[in-house]
Image 1: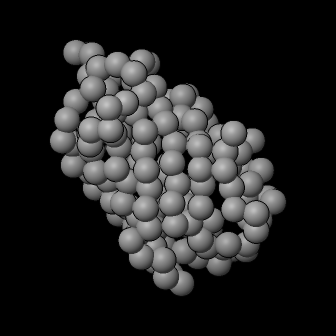
Image 2: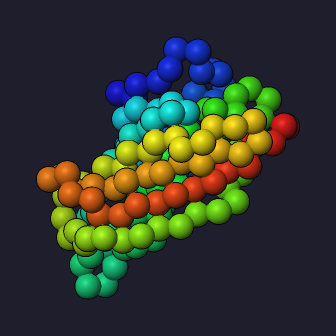
Length: 141
């Protein structure tokens, strides 16, 4: 079950929850656990998202981070607005070969036109695997 703020736009909730944040998130096996503009959490299996030597692919870390950051930015943008990613970076600190990775997204700046989130991906023991930062531009529809 995904925890959502009660005042979320129903159309946004439908897009996030019913489509699981988009087809790439579905293909990666991402499960959204908590979603808000200030803090979001999701998890992703290592299995199926590995590079040829068995490590979780670095791009998979970024997909988890961008999924969380973009959804959090869209929630902050609110009805009649949307978020567009304009910058993302990642630092990989530790590898993982099995289990689940949890991404915790925290807002660094929530403005009218820009917002920035930091996502920390951890393994099942709580060890930091990667740190992703994303900045989204907020636009009117």
